[in-house]
Image (cartoon, rainbow, N blue to C red):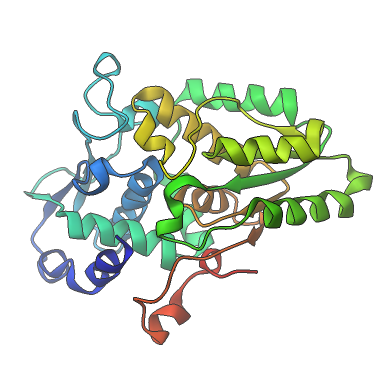
Length: 298
C-alpha cells in the first residue's frame, strides 16, 4: 500500500494546484483498504486543512456519508460527526471537487510522514474539535486512572502492521517499558497501554501486573487488524479515546501507527520514543531525509 501512496505524493493535485477557480473540496471515504482506519482518515483531513490554509480561495467539507468501517445507521449518515464536530470551511461556493483516492492518500501520508508536529497540532486544535461527550469521558478516565502518577503512554501496533513497518517483539517492548518505569520510580509511574494486539496486552500484564492500565475493550490477534474484525461506532470511539489519552501522558513509547502519530500531534511537547519506522525501500534518499521525527527510530 505504501509504495503507491508515496508515488501519489508526486502525481496528485495537478488540478487543485494549478486551478485558481474557487472550489468546494469534499472529503469522503477512501475506497482503498475498505475505507481505511480512523486516523488515516483524520490525517487526510489534516492534509486538506493544510492545503486550504495555503489556498484560501477553496472551501472544505468533510462528509463520509454511509461509507467506511465506522458507519452505523442509527448514529447518522456521516461518521465523522460521531466523534468530531462538523467541518465546513469557507464560503462553500464554487465547483464541487471530490478528491480522488490518490489525492486522499497524498493528504493523509504527507501529514503522517512529512508534517511538523507543531503545524499538525495547530491545524487539529483550530479545526478538529472532539464531541462534548467524548471530552467528558476522556477527562473522567484521566481523573480516575492518571492523576497522581507519572504516566508512560505505550502504543503497540501489532497484528497486520508488519506489512508496513518492521515488527517489534514483545520482549523489545517490555525491555523499553521496564527501563522507563525504573528510571522514573521516584515519580510513581504507571503505564497506559493502547494496543490492537491482545497477546501484547497479556504479555505486558503478565510481566508488569498492576503497573498496566488499559481501556479493556476491542482487540485482535494473529495478523488480522482490529479494524477488520469489528466495525461501527464503538470501534472508532475506542481508537479516539486511546489517541487522546496517550496525548495526556508524560511520555510516549510507540510503534509506527497513525493513531499514536496523532497523539504526538495533539501534544507536540510530549517526549516520544519510536521503536520502529515505516519501510523505506520505495523512497529516494531525498525523500527519506524529509521524513519527520515520528518516522525515525530513536
